[in-house]
Image 1 (tube, helix red, strand yellow):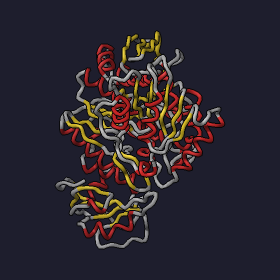
Image 2: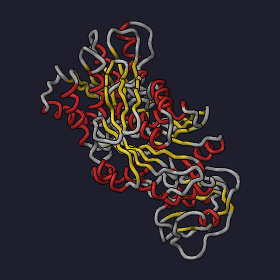
Image 3: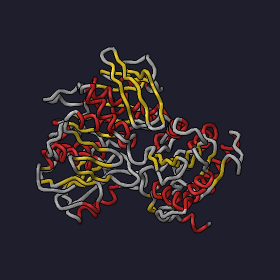
Image 4: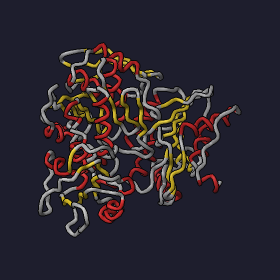
Length: 522
């Protein structure tokens, strides 16, 4: 993050709630930006020395100074350098507040809606954004897929979580400069735990669900829940805003974190697929091309038609309705128009049509709960068999491997287990773990499930097994544009792979199957 001088180092610290632990005073040196990557430091930047899982940012202080850093913020006591060094309790928390101060606290001048959850947060964020646009509200969005600032859409990366706090504050500043008044900010558990969205001044916090995911990082479901809960605790820290701030928690009453989150929230509204909530779905109708229902509360009834499929997307729509109608007083007609117009997020239940006589879908489902929801939705979209293709990532929560295999054996007719970012783990061992779980669940290798290490070949296998009216669904990669083997990212898109498989199956022109190193062993 670079730019012209806006404030001095002293002025930045004077404006934020960060205690300086080192002796002496913060130097009054001009600041041109904030950076936690020594390679990207520019003259006049403050370098943030943060601790990572595999690195210590303090070791890169000499490099940052050589690049022109004006000051350093870190946590270690043993640092001596030629420029001002300030020691704090948490470098990442300080970085978020320093970045906010550098950009003159843009979130304090907008209404900020934070959306978190294991599954559905990107879709829910997009539904909220669409409703706001149809209501004539000038809104921006920062998601794990992209950042939308007016007519500009910025890619936020390949394997992504919430952007770093410096990027978040820069996006917010650009949104404010563009005249936007609202922002929808998708927040992951990693982003919350690592303070990437600290100082974002949330007005409304939304949770979709908290299920089995990222336990390799958080250690337990309770710790994972507590990381998500940071978003709701942040509501109490929001500064008063000229436009008002409801500090509203939007909670899913159908999931097990509800009571915990309700207890820590100042003001909440609940939603549910059942009647026992502030907002619920009635008169639900499932269709292969979408869903319809009536959103009901004590104050309104809104008939809704959506192009999204599955009960879980009804839940996502209810969350968005709670935010916009209850939290922001958007009209029911704008809600109806916004939801009806939304066609879905790329890589989420995305149909791939080459004229085949069966349905082909690419979805991002990469957790046991998401896979369950995707397969349930698939059942509503076909009268034939459901053929599932998926894997489980290396260096991540190992229990997911068993759970996902069990879900697919229970809910799909045919299962094909394959690669999904094995990283430095043995792909063969990952597949063996999943195959064992499939067998224990009653699956028969070669009849109801197969292990195909190469993901392209796995998708081709699924397509070759499909008959008229069947549905093939490839889960786990969705919109992502790469796959990791060892430490290398290979260009990969499940949608391109599905098109390549369909082209070969139908003997018509299609894209070439993307390369993965597993092809070399075939």
